[in-house]
Each structure stands twice: as C-alpha cells, then as structure tokens.
Length: 88
Image 1 (cartoon, helix red, strand yellow):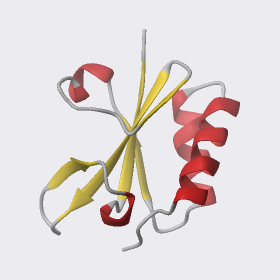
Image 2 (cartoon, rainbow, N blue to C red):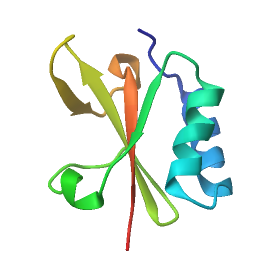
Image 3 (spheres, rainbow, N blue to C red):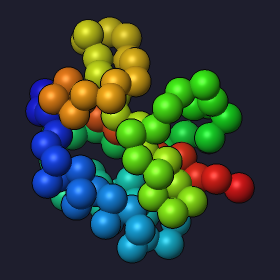
C-alpha cells in the first residue's frame, strides 16, 4: 500500500474542487492515484472526526489501516486511503 505526499494531497484537493459531484471527485482521485483507496461517505458517518482538509463544501479525511480495521489519521505518511464527504 502507498502513502500520500504533500504534492499528491494538493493535487487531490484541486481535483476535488474541479469535480461537480462527490462521486466524480472520488473517481478522479482513483484515476490520479492508482493503488490508493478513495471513498465517498455521508458526512454524518464522519461526525466527531477532524478532516485533514476542507475543500469548498467537501471534507477530506486520510485513512490508515492495520490490514483489518480502518481509522482516521492526520499523518499523510500513514495514509493508505481517503474519504471525501459533502456538506449539505
């Protein structure tokens, strides 16, 4: 699994801003970073967590995994995926 660096994170933020829908943003991230996991979830599912970035009306959370369980991380070096949410 791959981690994400600052340049890639900036690229993801730009892609997210350019996409009309949240699902389009996830698709763009998957295409830009093959092997890096990206998902969209309802903002309520991430309540209580702190996003690493706020991108317009979307939040980006970095995710780490021990191979079984997933958790939010603020450390891009530990991230193997990301979650995007949309504010209503």
